[in-house]
Image 1: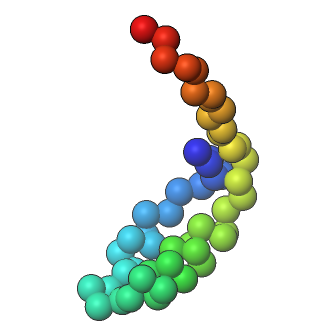
Image 2: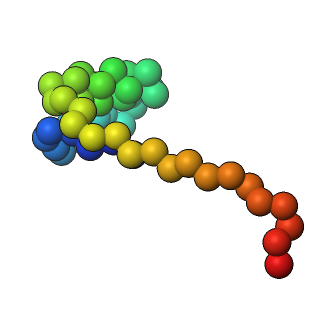
Image 3: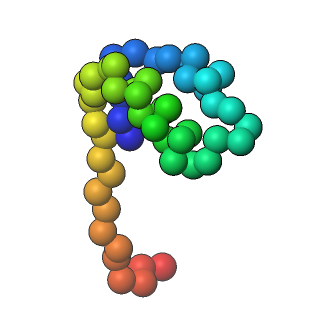
Length: 52
């Protein structure tokens, strides 16, 4: 989980129907790069042996 200092939904309007995945990624990356990551969440767990 990652939290950014802003949210820009305008990037979704910039995607075109026939953009391939690489083009979509580059557009979304360009928008997200204008913000700073302010928090990262991690989940850590271990599997326990069969415990019923």
